[in-house]
Amino acid sequence: MSTTYQLDTATSRAHPTPAPLRRLSIPAIRLRKENGVTAEPVVMLTAYTARQAQLLDAHCDLLLCGDSLGQVIYGLPSSLQVTLDMMIAHGAAVVRGSYHAAVVVDLPFGSYERSPEQALESAARILSETGCSAVKLEGGAVMAETVSFLSQRGVPVMGHVGLTPQAVNTLGGYNARGRSDAEAKKIVSDAVALDQAGAFAIVIEGVVEPIAIEATKSVGCPTIGIGASNQCDGQVLVTEDMLGMFDRVPRFVKRYEDIAATIAGAAERYATEVRIRAFPGIDQTYQPK
Ligand code: KIV
Image 1 (tube, protein in one colour):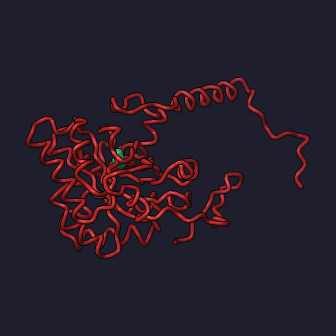
Image 2: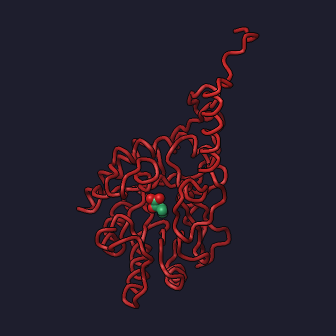
Image 3: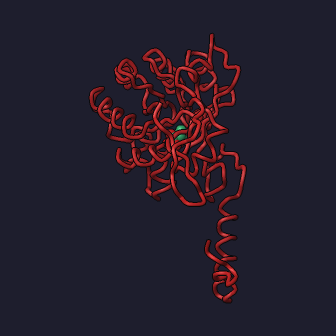
């Protein structure tokens, strides 16, 4: 296990985790589902920074450093502009901020589709430079050979089927997938192909519910739903969506907080205090030690 670090928020210094708990292993996550039954659903949230990872770690089985960071952190129009270097920088921060959950990092668009060898080169950089436990890639049967190639060479792979955001230009948008019979069958067979190729888990995103249920029943590994079905073997959300960071979120997202209002409210109070000169300066009674 790679060394993990914890941020001392008082000093902003990173210290090696004093007594690291054993990080959840990928085989342990895979074994959550046995003979088609998942007694304990898999909990996954996205994380992009060390501090965010620290706060989420104890509550999650998996932290996903997803390429959604393109939109969420960088304000990019899609995930297509995200680079391998960006994923590595953020993936390493998430590993430093966690010691319990297994960290999965997305292979960004263009870093793995050309060949299994290209995928291995990118995945090896991600694993060795971040210390994460696994990578995720998008695509179904067409990526099965790559999934098998990677998993036989020490790279655990999470698959991602249904609405695959890196394919937004071929899909024509971010709408739910699987409305036609043919597409529904294809999504299920994509999940089966990834499972047979050795994926340890599969994200099923944005599909009509019967497809998610059928795919979940058809594969041996856990499925992790997002806008899919609560019958999946686990769930994932983009953390900023569930915290209420953005005005517009997908319909399926449940908001657990209104963090945008909290931040804007704090900034407003601060600005008012600065403008009326009520912002506190250094306490004159303060004596340095
Ligand atoms: O990039 C991401 O955050 C994802 C999740 C939405 C599954 O792929």
